[in-house]
Length: 72
Image (cartoon, rainbow, N blue to C red; front, side, top):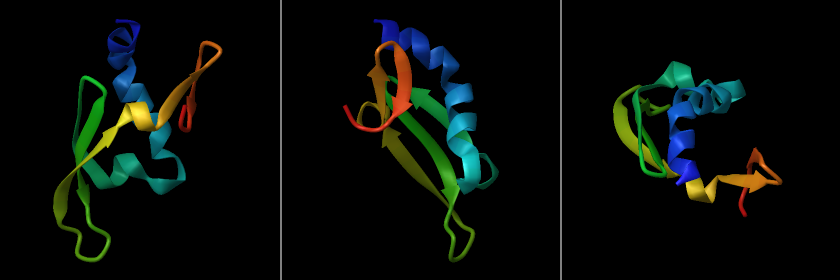
């Protein structure tokens, strides 16, 4: 499946998502399996790490051959 090949670009997606929210600065052990992105991220209140995951099918769409943020 073409989407699975795109997962090779997962580190670049993670950096793109970092943006103003500083995703890369506050999360570690960033990993992907299938269409799920997961990482241990710091809680804002106490700085403790907790596992979090995101289904990329719900967040990224293909708009005429270009990946975009947003729902289908």
